[in-house]
Picture 1 (tube, rainbow, N blue to C red):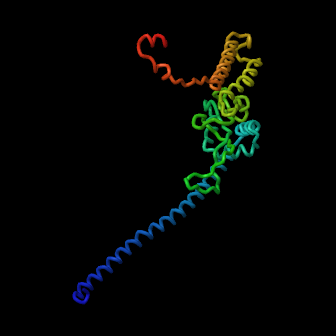
Picture 2 (cartoon, one colour):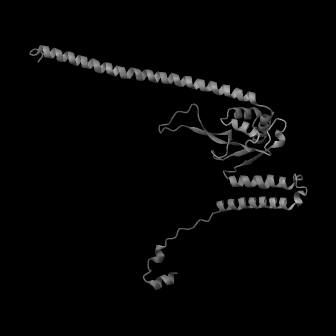
Picture 3 (cartoon, rainbow, N blue to C red):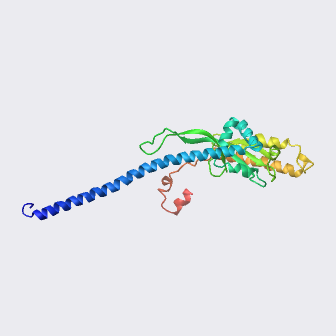
Amino acid sequence: TESKYPRRGGNLKTRNTELGSAVTGSSLTTVLPASTTVKKSIVLSSESRKELAKQAKVTKEERRAQIDGRHRYLISRLADGIDLSEQQVEETIISDDKFQLIEQFFAPSGLKKLLFFYQDILQQKSNASARSDGSTNSLPQKKLFITMGSTEDFTGTCAFFLRTSDEVITASNVSQEVNFGMFDCINGNILQGLEFFLSQIMIPALKSQQNWGAVKEGLKNSQIQEFLYSVDKFVGTLSSSQQNIEDKIQLTKVDIDIYVRNLQNPSDYITAG
């Protein structure tokens, strides 16, 4: 063909070569930018992590500078109750995403409660590699964190601070205006933990209370007695609810076919009834 149609063959060869170059050029144009993009994304990812770490460090130091006598009071109560050092509690608080809740708690007419959970949280190993199924190794680790109490499951210890008035919380009045308490979710049973807290701590404290504010009669007052009776009744309800959950009745599955197999007429049904 080349000898018979040299010009056509030459043209065809040239066209094929041009086409091959075009395809090759196109392939290079596609591959090189992709490789460059991957490299750029890796660099950007590394730079982003460094920038985020830098911002987190700045935020922590800004929060550390805000800590005063009010924060110290909270930190000391938490450290005593959870058996952590005050330094550990401080580092946890200033690193928490919900740090602003503390300021909202201190503000005039602010939050009525401030909650902390101390419990096992699954932490992914820093050197863990992904398994073949895509999962990673995770280990439970105790962690203290601020919570609203409605987004995380409660499985460990709850430490709480309650306001007694709408006044602004200051370093001088924090010990009078803020009450601290704790209760445990014993073996995953929140009812048992709440019952223990009320029956063993709160009710004895209330019944030994001498000063009831404007109520001069104290424990002899009918309203105070009614209040204590309602608390006792509530604790009893918690106890019975817990028992009902633990000792729930298991109904045995019955094969009724053996009873209805031989029922043929109305008299058989009457006899079976």
